Every structure is written in structure tokens, then in C-alpha cells.
Amino acid sequence: MKASIVSVTAALSLSILSTNMRAASEDDKFQQLAAAYIEAELSANPEEATELGDHRFDDVLTDYSHATRDRIVFAQRQFQIEANSIDPTKLSQVNNVDLRILKDEIERHIFEADEIKEEDWNPLVYMQSLANSLYLLVARDFDTPEKRIPNLRQRMLGIPHVIDQARENLQHPPRVHTETAIEQVQGAIGLVREGLSPLLDRAPEMKKEIAPLQEKTAKALEDYKKWLQEDLLKRSDGDFRIGADKFRKKLRFALASDMPMEDVLKRAQADLAQTQLSIFETALPLYKKYFPNADEKSLGDKKKVVAAVLDKLAEQHPDDNTIVGYAQKVLGEASDFVKQKNLVRVPNVPLEIIVMPEFKRGPAVAYCDSPGALDKNGKTFYAVAPTPKDWDKKRKESFFKEYNNFMIRNLTVHEAMPGHYLQLAHANEFQAPTMMRSIFRSGTFIEGWAVYAEQFMAEAGYGGPEVKMQQLKMRLRVDCNAIIDQSIHAGKMSEKEALDLMMKEGFQTEGEAVGKWKRARLTSTQLSTYFVGVSEHLDLRERAKQKAGEGFDLRKYNDTVISFGSPPVKYVRELMGL
Image 1: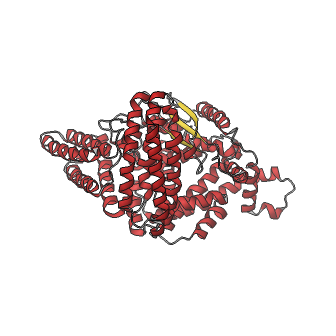
Image 2 (image 1 turned 90 degrees about the vertical axis):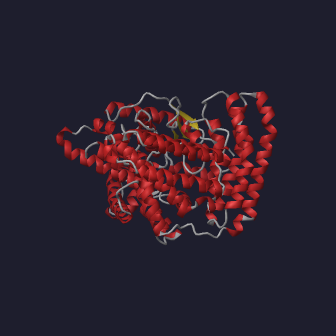
Image 3 (image 1 turned 180 degrees about the vertical axis):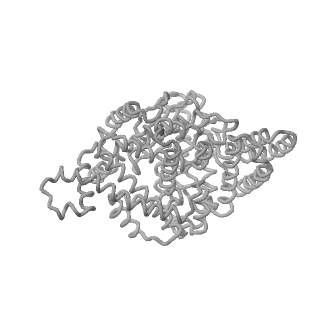
């Protein structure tokens, strides 16, 4: 496979690089090293390269063989030696930060290869090759169909090989991972049979030629699904909890934060209590408005007041026929509000609302799909979902009560304006001597900004107390996310304990809580990024306020924070002199 050839090429490049670096300045050394590292990463992870906007590897899939994985981790150790040889005190400030990002990235790779070894127990790892690799070639109009379809063909031809590697590598997964993989493979089958049409329909002759391969690929995926059901599921007896030691190490890489594991839990629990008080104080006037005859006993029952107001607000909700149009209206409203209040600079890059693809529907009503760091001309898509076609009426109703009119407004702030769309558009404007910061973005910074954006919009009065109720409800969800993430993987939290926390303390619906319990078992550390990210953003803003005093300018502050790309917040604090 080309991925194997690329691994050898990367090793040769390292040897040449080492020779060239001896006579170069420290900045030149680092920039050469970063370029070589990025090249090795893109070539070894072709699906990620496609997503980032580098289309040189659109015809290949990741090689999950043990031999290639061993070569890659060997190369990582060689990169680590070269990175440690660079004197950070002789680097420019931007390169100094990016060197530390590079070192963390290398260390994370080695840790995951040595201790996590996800390819050996997580069938979901292979879905990026079995489904997402194809979807990425269809979703964005980055080239003509005549140039994209041959790559689509080559990737479909490579899918059986990836399936063989999955069968060889996977041993004793946790049951929830195999069950989810079975669901996702069914979605991949639908994608191959139906979801490629937006691209193939534009080249009818090529569509006709590729049709037999589509059916052959779908059949290979059906056989893989059968293997998952009849073979792997029977031996899916692994523990979904990764344990305290691995969680602590993985959390450090996921967060790139100075906040210790124990502090994350303590701060999340404290924030949960404070946010419960805030949501009650916001709900009380609304409760008196909606229930004018309520007695003093009812008014003093904080959880009852909050739940009643949330239920009342949930009565106003969209449906499958109105959700996309409503989101378009809300996006315009939020954009106008940001400009009117002068909260942050609104970038002039395209944002398009699309209907979420069928195979991606179910977990949430919306997501942001921004162009990759190497795709400078791409649009950002704000995808909004009608419910899956196979849901019954009761389930659809429950879903839209959760994602009601007011929640859609808060969600649009998070995903689009001034959340992910705006922040990532600013990030794509950032220029540095290397692409380190653009390619290896901090999820903690990105998710933290989006949650922070919800808060500063609510503080500015966006949507009134009704939308603030949703913002605070989402903050409770963020708190619960961090608590269950750590309590499950570094502790022994049970399903009942997790559901009670989310439903009784976080006011989540049963469906939302059950879905989060599943997600918390499928992933580890990612659910903590939202809470740690928003905590660090708010800490940073408080530092800036204390330094500026009465001269603090929120617009200037926000613009500055998102002007450095998407590095960990601790580096933004350093770059801002805070």
C-alpha cells in the first residue's frame, strides 16, 4: 500500500533532514523538522489529509498493519530525538510555542501506540476508512467529479483490505464498541449504495462504470457487519473503562492544560452547584409569569421551578419540515446581534446551512463542518438535521422538545455564530512559519471557545432569559460531561449513577442522558474538553479584565484571543502576556 511506502519515505526524509539541520539556525531547524513531521503525518493518515484539504493521498486508506504501526512509532521516536535537540531559548516566540505543540503531539502518539493500542480493541477506529474516507470525497466540491471519482474508486477498492486488517487486529473489544460499530457499518452500507449520488450523478458515464464496484463494496461491508455480529460480538468482553493511570496520562494530552485531573473534577462539581443556582434565579421570574397562581412552597422548590420552566419553553419547537428554515432565520439573527453589540469581528467567509446527511443523524440536531487548515477556499457548513426516517412519532417529539426553538438559538451560537464557525474562520487567517498550529488544533481551546461564546452572548442579552435558560442548561451538561468522564474511566460510576446525575442534577431528558452514557463509554477524556476549555477561557478573560481595569474592551479581547490560531489556552495566555 502507498501508506507503507510513505513510511519508508518519511524515514529517509528524517535522515536527510538530520544532516541538513546541523548547519542551520534553531528557527530553521525547527521549521524543517515541523515540515518533515507534518508530511509524515499526512501521508500516514490519508483520511485526515483529505479532511484538512490536502488531496495528494485521496486514493489511499490508512494502513493498520502491525508492521506499518511499528514503523510509524519508530519514526515518532526519531522525531522526538530531533525535537529535543532544538534549543527553545533560541527560537522566535511563535516557533517556541509550536515546538512545544510538536513535542506534545509526538509524546501523545508514542503513548497511544505503547499503552492505548486502540487499533487492537476498538472497531470504531476503522470507520474513518470504511465510511468517512468516502464521504470526504463527496461532501466538499474541491475538484471536478472527473478527478474525484477515480480516487473514490481506489478507496472503495481498498476497503476489503481494511476489513481484513480489522478482522486480524481486533481481539476483545468492549461490547458497546462492537454494538456501535455494527450500527455504523449499516450507515456505511447506505452511504456506499445511496450517499455517493451527489457526486456520481454529475458524471453519468463514470457512475455507470462504478456501479458494480459500489455493490461489491456494499457486499463486503455487509459481510463485515455479519462478522461483527456473529464473531466479534461474542468475544466483546473488554472493559470500556481505561483505568485511572491511563486516563490521567491521556487527559494531559487531550487537554494540554496545567489543570490536574483532581482539580478538573472538583471544579466541575463546584461549577455544577453554582450553575444550578444561576439557572434557578433565571427561571424564577419566568415561573411566576407562566404560573401566576403558584404558592410559596412551589416557588421555593428550586428543581421543580427549573424543570417546569424548561418544560414550558420546550413546547415551542420545530419539526422535520421547519427545522432547517428556522436555523437559517436564527443564524441571521445571531449574526446581526454580534455585529450590533460589537462583540467580536465577523469574518467574511462563506457559511452555508445544509441538511445533515442521513447517516450522520440521530445524536444531535446540528454540527459545524469547517474547511480544513489546508483548504483555504472551502466553505463552512452548518449542518442541521431532521430526525432519522426510522424514528417513530414519540421519539421525534421528544427530540425536538430537547432541541426546541430556544435551544436551537443557543446551539447556533455554539456551532456557528460566534462559536465554531467564527473562531475557526479566524484561526484559518493565522499565519506562522510552520503549519503546526493550524493542523494540530487544540480541541479544548475550540470547544471551550464555543461554550464561552454561549456565555458572552447570554451576558449581552441575546434571546432574553429564555435563551439564557438553555445556555445554563448546556453549562450543566458541560459540568456533568466532565464529572462522568472521569468518574467512569478513572472510577467505577455505574449507569444509574450517571443517569441520575445528568437527569436529576443537569435537567437532561432521559433520551439525552442515555445517549451521553453511551458516548462516555465509547470515548475517554474528550467529554472533559468542554468544561476545561470554558474554564480556561473564563480564567483568561478575568486575568485580562484585572490587567486592563476600566479600560477592558470585550471586542478587542475576543479578537485577540482567537488571533493565534487554535493552540492550547495556556499558550494564548503566554502570548497575551497574561
